[in-house]
Image (cartoon, rainbow, N blue to C red; front, side, top):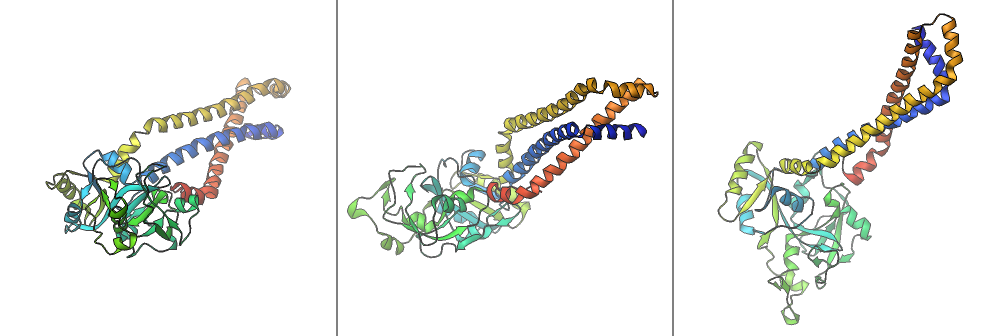
Amino acid sequence: MYLFRLAMASLANRRFTALLTAFAIALSVCLLLAVERVRTEAKASFASTISGTDLIVGARSGSVNLLLYSVFRIGNATNNIRWDSFEHFANDPKVKWAIPMSLGDSHRGYRVMGTTEAYFEHYHYGHQQHLELSAGRAFANDPFEVVLGAEVADALHYKLGDELVLAHGVAVISLVKHDDKPFTVVGILKRTGTPVDRTLHISLGGMEAIHVDWHNGVPARDNGRISADQARNMDLTPQAITAFMLGLNSKISTFAVQREINEFRGEPMLAILPGVALQELWSLMSTAEKALFVVSLFVVLTGLIGMLTAILTSLNERRREMAILRSVGARPCHIATLLVLEAFALALSGVIAGVALLYVGIAAAQGYVQANYGFYLP
C-alpha cells in the first residue's frame, strides 16, 4: 500500500507531465470508444431509416437496388408496377396498410415522390417515429400541392405558399420541365436525418397530372397540351407506380405474403424485407467499417506508447530519487513495482477521463447528431 501512496506522490510531484500523458491517453480512449459507438449506432440508425414496414415491393430486380431507389432515393427502378397489381395486394385481408410510391421526377437535384396520405400516417423511421410537419399541412385534394423535406426547404429557401416547377428525370440540370403546371408548397416536414429530408412529396394525382399530356415519354406540343385547370378535372388515377410498402396485420404472415408477391403471375415483382436488405447493404461497407476501427486501435496504441516513452525518459531525471529509495532499503523489485503502479495509475486515469469525455461529448452533441444525421446516441 505504501508503494501505491509513493507512486501517487511521485506523480503529484510531476503533475504537469502526468496530466499531459493522462490527457493523451484519454483522447485516444475517447476516440476509440466514440468511433465504436458511432459505428454501432450508425448501423442501428441505418437499419432504422425505415421502421415498421414489413415489405417493400417493386419490379423484379435486386433487393439492394429496390431498397436504394425506394428508401434512399438512389438509382432508378428497372420497371414500373401496374396500378391494379398494387390494388390487388393493398386489398389483401392480410395487409393492414399500403403506401404507393411513384418516382422519376426531380427539382434542382432533389427527388420527387408521388404518394398518398397513407405515407404521412404510416411511414416510420428511427425508433418508430412518425413524420411530423414543422409548418403547414399535408397535401389534400388539389393535385398541385407539395410537401417539402426539411433539407429541401432549408437549402432552397422555400416557405409556405411558394411555387416551384418540377423537372422530368432525376438529373441536377434538366432540359425538360413541367413549367406549365407549377406546385404550391403547403407543408414542410420536420428534420428526420433520413432521405425524407431530401424529398419533395406530391400526390399520385399530381404525378399523373404533370404527365397527363405526355406520350411515349415526350411532352405534347402546343395544341396537344393540357393545362393545370384542365388536369384538375380529369381522372388522375395512375396507370403505374414505381414501388409500394406494405404493413401487415400479423408478422407471422410476412413470408407468406412475400412468397405470394414473388410468385404473382400478373407481372414479375419482388418483395423484400427491409431489415434483411439493409443488412445486405451494410455488409457491402464492412471493409471501410473495419478500417476505421483499426485506425482507432492504432490511435490508442500510440497513446500508450507515448505514456511509456514519458516514463522511460523521466528515468534519467529520477536517478537521485531512485538512489534515495535504494539507500533506505528499497529493492529493485520495489522500484520496478513503483514504475508499474505509476503507469497503471496514468492508464486508469486516462481511461476514466476518456469515458467521461465521451459521455460529455455525447450529451452535448446528441440533439444535433440526431437532427442532422438521423441516429440516436444513447
